[in-house]
Amino acid sequence: MDGTEPGRWWRITGQEIAGAFRPRREPPPLLPLRRGIMAGAGPLLLALLVGVGFIAAFVGALHNPRPHDVPVGVVRGDQTAQALLAATAPQLRAVEYGEPTDADEAVRRGDVYSTLTSVPPGLTLTVATAAGPAATTTTAAILAVAARSAGVPLTVTDVVPVDPADPRGVVPFYLAIGLVIGGYFGGIALSLALGTVPRTMARAGVRVAGLTLHALLLGLAGTLIVGPGLGIWNQNLFGLFAAGMLLALAAALFAAAVQSWLARVGTTLIIMLVVVLGNPGSGGIYPPEFLPGFFRGVHEWDLPGLGADLVRSVVYFPAGSAAWTAGKLAIWCVASVAVFAAATIVLGRPVSSDRTGPGS
Image 1 (spheres, helix red, strand yellow):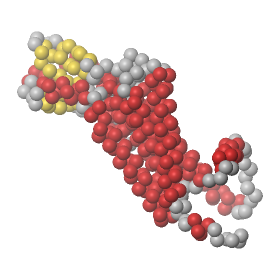
Image 2 (cartoon, rainbow, N blue to C red; image 1 turned 180 degrees about the vertical axis):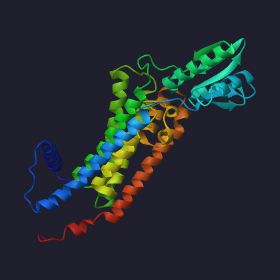
Image 3 (cartoon, rainbow, N blue to C red; image 1 turned 90 degrees about the vertical axis):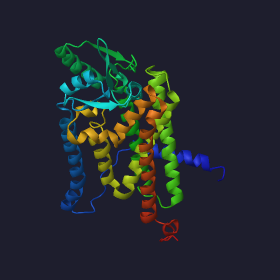
Image 4 (spheres, helix red, strand yellow; image 1 turned 135 degrees about the vertical axis):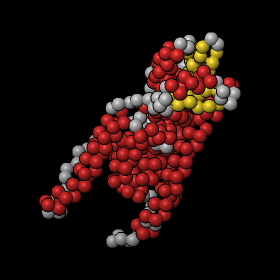
C-alpha cells in the first residue's frame, strides 16, 4: 500500500456519504411506460406484503393476551401446592422437581417464573420477577384467588427482582430490538453499497470482518447507553457487551446471507422474519405463554426473542443460564457465514473476469 492509499480511502468514503444525501432523478426512459409500470409493481407488492404481515402479526399476536400453561415449579409430593395449581389449570402449569433445592435453583436460574411450596401454616410463592414481570404478577394474582377460595394463606417472595430503573422489565427487549435492527441494517447497507455477492472469498472475509466490527461497536454503544449512560444496569456489563455484540453480529450476518442469494427480495424476507414475526413473538411485549398458537414458540429461535432472553439472563441470572441461548445465536452466525460463503462461490465472479472488456 503506498502513502496515498489512506487519503484516497477517506476521499472515497466522503464521496459515498455525500452521495447518500444527493437526490437521484429517475433515469431516462429506456423501457415503454407499460413495462416501467410492471417493473415498479414488484417492489410495491413486496411493500404491501410487509405491511399486511405486520398488521396481521402484531394485531393477531397481541390483541388479547391470556395466560396459558404459565410454568410454576412445585416439589413432587407437595400435595397442597399441587392441588392448588391443579385448580388454576389451564392458566398455570405445574413443573415438578424432586427436591426443594432443585425447585429453588430453577427459579433462581430463570428456568421457571416461580415456584409454589408448602410452608406451614400456608403456601409460599417464590418468584423471579426479572424473568418476566407480567408473568409473575399474573401468576401471583391467579394463585391468590385460588388460595383465598381454598382458605390457605399465601406468601409471595421475590428472589430475583427487576432493577428499580426498569420496573416493567422491558429494557432487555428494547435493547435486543435495537441491536437486531442495527445489525441487519448493517448487513443491508453493506450489500447496497458493495453489491450483494462478493467476487472472491477474500472479499467475503473482509465483509464479515467489517460486519464484526460493526457489531462490536453497536454492542458497545448499547452497553454504554443502558449502563453508564442511563444508569439502568451496573452489573455484568462486560457480559452484556459480549451478548450485544453476538446478537448484532447474528442479525448482520443473517441479512448479508439472505441478500447474497435473494437480493432485494431478501430484504423483505429479513423484515418478515426478524420484525414482523420476531417482535410480537419475542416475549418482550408479553410473555410467550400469553401469546396465541404459533407465536408462543417464536422466541426460542428468532433473533429478537433470543436476544431478549440472552440479555435478561446475562443481567439477572447465573452465567450458565445464558449458555444455550448464546449457543443458538452462534448457530445463526455460523449458518449465515456458510450461506454467504456458498453464494460467493456459486454466484461471485472471479476477479479475472472483470478485467476483460473493451479497455483490456
